[in-house]
Length: 216
View 1 (cartoon, rainbow, N blue to C red):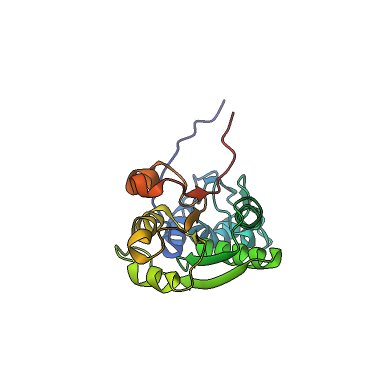
View 2: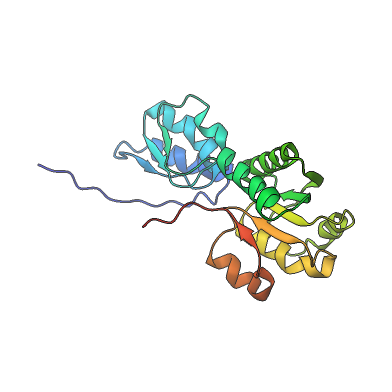
């Protein structure tokens, strides 16, 4: 006879703690066959060793931190690009295509955002550009005008942000009032999407982001 599969969804809240909690719950369930996920790099990193112990294969569609496939896991797989590729392309596009010479870099301090921001920063400098600032913000806040104003003092031609759409939208909406109205906003696959566009409206016009190639 054949098998009947059921898709069971759990919310790891995109955090390391949540990823471990969900992984432990699934690992204790002998009826689980495989894991479709996790989604965020931080949650995925916390979940991998737990699934390794029980031998549950996992396939992430979106966890892009390069280190995830460098840990020697026997169960982790992904079908997304890594941030080594994404960060390099973003830096090259900023420097070679947009002609940006001075770049400010911000990130949310997470495994994904900070790691990606570092790759962009290193690659951009390697190309000959100048990174005038590399700063972290606290996720979940509604006002980033102070850190943006501090960046504006360096007069960057563009602002690169490694992180997710909620913070990216706030940053974009406050760039004008913080002295960065002429700077280009450049995001990533964590900020790309309809939610960012809905939250930024006209402020999001002219923004850039990297993302996976859409399916045909």
